[in-house]
Image (cartoon, rainbow, N blue to C red; front, side, top):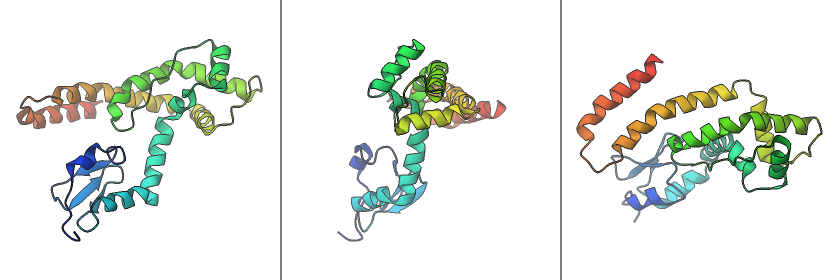
Length: 198
């Protein structure tokens, strides 16, 4: 009914919205966590969310977020001729872990595995550049090649790993049915102060 639509908690679990949709205090509104935008759902309901998701700004944010984060993962999955070339050339058969789109802290193990593979990835890219191996000619390889050209790439990943290692125990502790809310402010203050000291 126009003007009387309200937020539906079911939306938070739908694949289309769960990576960015957030509930706010006003039941006639919702928030996009990626764009930091408040969406008025009072007239259009779920259609307002679908409209926002199709918007150019939202699409650009999603593409930028996933493009940099999933580079190595998408290159190695699914296995292909380029993956076989990589294993043959580098002697590294360790597989890349799957990237989690909607819970970034869970990508700590993914980032650590990526750093473990990185010297082999760079060697593979260099061999392709010298013509010793065929160019896969896929977007994910171009992304990997661009990351190899970035002298600060491993530093950036290292910063992510450092932050995620400190935040993960905090999040794990609060994923419980126990009454933890009275301790939240103090624990968050301690966490933030600890990060500011580094």
